[in-house]
Length: 402
Image (tube, rainbow, N blue to C red; front, side):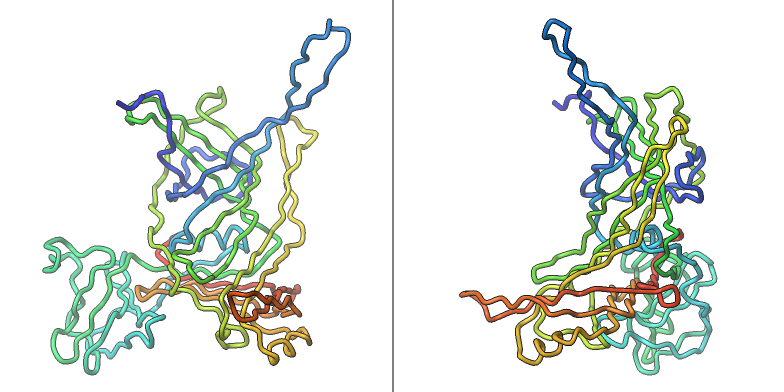
């Protein structure tokens, strides 16, 4: 029988911040799943051993709290806009499409297995319809698809990712039903966006007293983009630093009364959902790719009692591309050419993450010779930017309303 005194993590949520480090009592919670949660307060300590105490031990001296630790997460469709907003730079949000569903209109299906078809807004204001496939001319009917009707395939009202047929027959359209989709755009910026993290633990049987933690002024210090043979789903292991911490064992704890709760879309990008292009071309014979943006944020104690401040230095970005060796490729990287690199995550349901690095230098790498494979070359990648041309720009289309 489980011991009810054993606690485990039951809930994790992000909280959007406008001022780093400020505790909110009525925040909107963006709930998500994590694979690892190492964010924690750690007390500074110092051992000052004293003489003259008959050789006895001296107690450790204690100081302020450091707030840091990694968050390990899958690169979910709904999570990526939040990560990019927080790590890269502040985003601007608009509706993913300005097109309304219109009767007797031709709509376009997916161009290939990597992209989604045309999307339109449903008149209910809470859904977006994405073309899954078309027959004949792909023409809509006289009336808009009714999402309050019963789906014959499930016997229930239409829900997320269900399909619904419009204008059944030779020219029909099959739509994918999505929650309303939003577009977020942004560029790399020295003005980083902090967030809050709320965590709740409870006993094994769920009937005990909650242990609640609230971290504020949390800066996500890196984001990585990597693809290699054998990858199943893409993941992020994000180091963090923070400014403030409270939990519900402390006298200054204020219970949270959330203004709303959002479940972050639990749909992961898998291996075939990612495409990398350099100067518009996918690299041939490449087995590994990685690129990491490091923000290098630090936090320090202030003279003012109980206060911390943060520093955002110059960002750094580097990575590698490993591919089979050719004399032509060796000669090309010898000259350190600078090219545009684009990373795209996409699925047929309408989700899309696009990242553009205008200036990525490829450098002379290491030629590898082994007994079990052909020769390979690992080419270092180094991204750069300026005030007029940012290191990175991004665009996301997901159901996340951040």
